[in-house]
Structure formats: structure tokens, C-alpha cells
Image 1 (cartoon, rainbow, N blue to C red):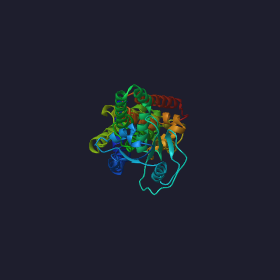
Image 2 (image 1 turned 90 degrees about the vertical axis):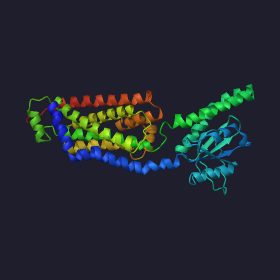
Image 3 (image 1 turned 180 degrees about the vertical axis):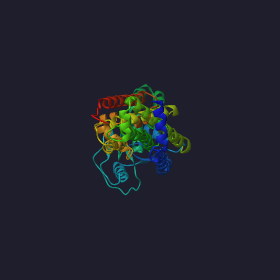
Image 4 (image 1 turned 180 degrees about the horizontal axis):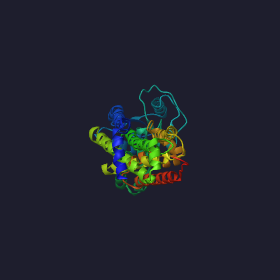
Length: 403
């Protein structure tokens, strides 16, 4: 098997197309992502959120004080507050939604009445204050800013009972409770919701690494199919020899695995060291995730290579549909698509290798090393073991009348 491994390592590195698609193409695509998205978040990450507040004596409301105290990491104010009537607030919200009057209720009760106004300012949400603990939010659409605003309101409302109990005990207890609410909300915004890297475009780089993992499957498919007697002269010679077919195949797979891990290592050095992309997790865990993903990609290619007695072209088409379709579902072309699939058919994201890989990177960024991350890694290892086992069974069952 060692001789097979060395032989195919040389063959892989001498094949220009394999080196291009395995290494050069991901680096080019990563550079394009960087130049396309790199400056967008930097320009918008400290942008103040315009909010309309409706309610009697709203300026004295404790939640308004919380909103005014919130700042970004660079010290810029997080909220741009406008006190307005219901009609003015509805007009501001409608303008932020691009004229779409169908605002989405998130918390509390959203009145149906809408009015027209000459206000030119836009508001991403309306906050209605009816009492110290009753806070309602209506947003125009869902994006990064609306999600942060929803998290702030949610955090405040979870402290409603605490505020009520504290108010009953006296002004001093109420002041302490309000301070606690403010601290909890800052934690939700800076840590709990956004993770170490708040950039909404970083999932594209997660998908780039997932795509590199899946590229191993195409190389494995090409190499393994070339060993099958009905597909090539090399396969005829291997089949007629006394060498163990499984040992020969796994020598080839080991060569592809080594090549793809080298490519992955170069890509990580380029993305993390040169482009300075922050994946939001510990580097050793990022490397572990990438290695598990490459292993899964090899297993997928091995399994597809033994499906039926089809030609290489047919099997390559099957694998392309799996990898390209999986990439689309995982958010490679549109990040939002993964959330749509998660809502309508979550089981697809559980068995799609690219979705599992991107979920592992996402978990490292948002939650750190924990249950969700380990669940993703265990899923990858289970998929790898299952695909290799099925491929080996299919390989042993193939018999040829003559060679």
C-alpha cells in the first residue's frame, strides 16, 4: 500500500487540473470574497440603528436609558432614537421597508392602523412603551440590525418580573435591577448573539472551506473509477493482479487525503494569516473541523465511485449534483438559503456534509466549543464511517465474468 500511496501522490501533484481545482481555485475564490465583502461590514458595523419610540412620557422610560447607553466596541452610539406619534412611527417604518406596509410583529401587540407622514427619517423598528416593563417591538424586515434590536428587547422583557419585584421593594432595589438589565443586554449584543466575529459575510468563507473539503470527493472519484476493470486499462491490470483491491483503493484514498490536507493547510494560512479573516474560533479547532470535512469528502467520493457499473461521466454527474446541490443548500451562493432549509426541512441540513461543516464553523464562532460543535463533528465522523463502509461493501460485491 505504501508503494501505491507514493505513486499516486506523484500522479496527483503532476496533474495540473487537480492542483488548480484543489488549491488555486479556492484561493482565487477566497480573494474574490474578501474584496467583495471585506469592506462592507467594516463600513456598516458601527452604523447607528434608527428606532422610533412611541409612548407617553417615553423619554423618562428606563428602557430608553438602556438604549441610550448601548455602544459599539469602538464607542459609537448603537441607537439613534426618535420619539414619535403612532402615525409618524408607522410612516418611518414603512419608508425603511421600501414602501412595504407589511411590518413584522416581534414582541407585544402591533396595531393595524397606519398613517401617512412627511417624515423623511427611516426607522428599522418601532418600540412601544406602555409601562416600565411592557415593551413591544415591530420591525420592517429581518436583517443583522433587526436581529440585534430583537435581542435587546427580548433581554429586557426577560427581566420584566425582576423589575416589578424590585419596584415593590423600593427605589434603590429598582435602580439596581435596571443596572442589571442594562449589563445583561450589553452581553447579549456583544457576546451572546454576535459571537467573536459579528461579520454577517463570514459564512461565505465557511462555505468556501466546506467546498474545499468536498473537492476531495471529485479527486477520489476519478482515481477510484480508473481502477475499475470496466472503465480503464489500468483497472484491467489491477483487477488481474493478485493485489488486494481494498488495500489498493485505500492507498489511493490516503494519497488524495494527504494532498487535500496540504491544500487546506495552505488555504487556512492564506485566509487567516494573509487576508486576516477571523473565523471566530480557536485555530486548533478550525483545523480539526477542516480535517474532518476533508475526510468526509474522501468518503463521499469513494461511495459514489462504487455506485453501479456506470461510466465515469455518469458517476461524476451524480457527485456534482450532490456537491453543488449541497453547496447551494448550505449557503455557498446565498447564505439565507440554509436558514430556509432549516425551517422547512431540517433533516436535509443534518445529512448534507457541507451544511454540517459550515454549522461546525458557525458553532465555533457563535457558541465556542460546546454541545452543538461536538454534535456537528460527531455527525461528520458518522457520515465518513458510513460512506466508507458502504463503499467497501459495494466494492467487494462487484464481480466480472472476464478481464
